[in-house]
Image (cartoon, rainbow, N blue to C red; front, side, top):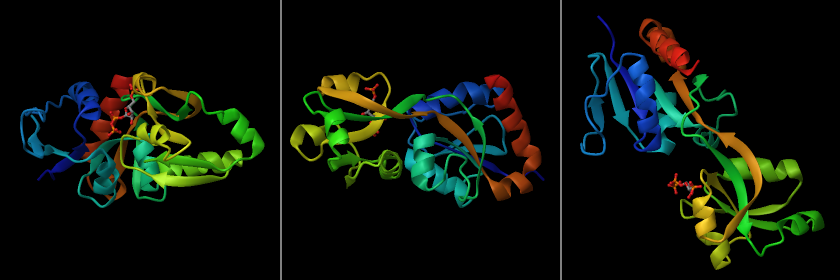
Amino acid sequence: MTATLTLALSKGRIFDETLPLLRAAGIEVLEDPETSRKLILPTNQAQLRVVLVRASDVPTYVQYGGADLGVTGLDTLIEHGGDWAGSGTGLYQPLDLKIAKCRMSVAVRADFDYVGKVKQGARLKVATKYTTIARDFFASKGVHVDMVKLYGSMELAPLTGLADAIVDLVSTGNTLKANHLVEVERIMDISSRLVVNQASLKMKQAQIRPIIDAFAKALA
Ligand code: PRP
């Protein structure tokens, strides 16, 4: 008997950009998450199903076995508590899927003298959803920060006086521009990773390996 395999994805860019990789592995998702309200989507392979979870919940689902595999951004993975290799979380991270590419950056109001403040050793107020990445980055620069945790619309923080700077994802740069903010540091490049539950990899090796191999071949 073949065990059921569960793949965790989040709606939007990650779902859309994972589809071509799934196709390369011969997998078709049989419902469109934009029109269906279902959270469990069947595929053309009876033993494989897709579950739709919030982007920030993908590592949790995979770590605790609610899903065998998942696709998640490096940003989410680091904030979840994994390091670059995802170690220490029971997550095996075999592939950089090179999708949903963007960067993690520091941005400030155009009239804020970021370089000057850093040079003076001033304490910076930083608003972000990505507190682990931001804390590590500023610590590595020796800059003291007061962190303000936000869950969205970070761009508002420097405009309202809540913070001097934000740490946020930048893709086209249009959101920063529209809010009169400028990117002053690029912390890291971000892309989505395939993550696999380590116990699943052992128990369901015969089902999981071909998927990893097909993804790897499609990326080559
Ligand atoms: C991200 C990020 C910025 C925007 C940047 O938000 O937080 O707001 O994208 O993209 P741009 O440089 O192309 O303008 P996202 O849409 O992922 O939603 P979020 O606010 O829930 O993170």
